[in-house]
Image 1: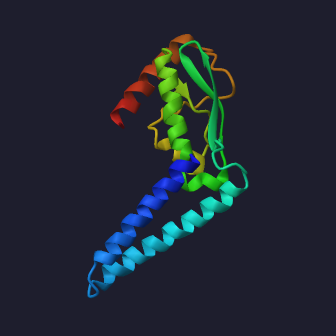
Image 2: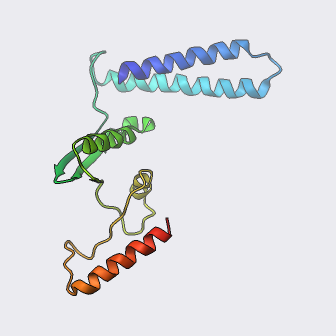
Image 3: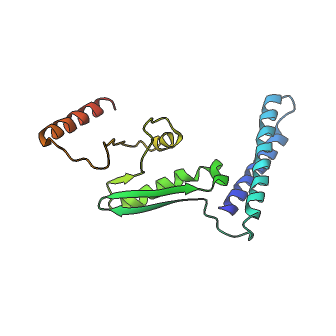
Length: 167
């Protein structure tokens, strides 16, 4: 990750410097925008240097995000997901989830369970998970045991019909 991040930043810096040199002086808005971008890249490079100096060796691989998953039947259960906050600007969790979905579906899973969400559906975790177009199942308690099997089947069919109308 380190080499790629540094190389990408250096390439971007070079392109910005070249574009600034080629921009005529009367294009003040464009120059201001490019200079802002250059300052941002310089700041990134400085941050990278500080972060990576903590790890010691130049060529050391760094785990910046991960997911612990298991397969149970035709479902992938994501038990835990996390990331190093110092790298949050790169949004590594998106790539982790996509790679985890690929892993699950390659193994024949039909579902990939990302875990729960808050009941309000407006917290940060729910908004993040919403990017993956989830199906959210709401349960009353830990188990779904129908007391009236006929009513249960009817309500499940009604729920599917209502849900399909709202999509």
